[in-house]
Length: 176
Image (cartoon, rainbow, N blue to C red; front, side, top):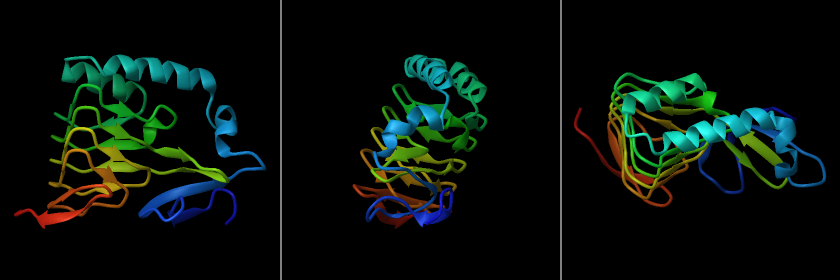
């Protein structure tokens, strides 16, 4: 795999995800974080996103996230303590009228021993993501889908479906 090449799988034995992998040298990839992204930008983003975790105003949260590049749809609701990736927030898209539950984590990057990966996270319209979920890089959650609480979303979720678990798996199709 050449540096920066796109692939459908990242990590060891993880689900299918659309990510871009970047190889690193002898030491693990986390030692390169300051080269991958400007540390000042990461720190400013981290402080802003940490404050957003506690804003009761949904409109104010949407405004701040949009300032930092997150694509947040109209009337999207982001729950308290929800955390978004501070390295690549511009890779997150949340559709209109979607709900991100309490304490949910959305990642667009991951550091591995011999490489690091980035991938867009796309959350469709009218999606409900339960509390305490983790969404890994390169995931697409289709329109009108529901992700159950405490789920690890490590593969794409099709539209109009109910998924849950660790790792996430289909529970049933939702009526249109």
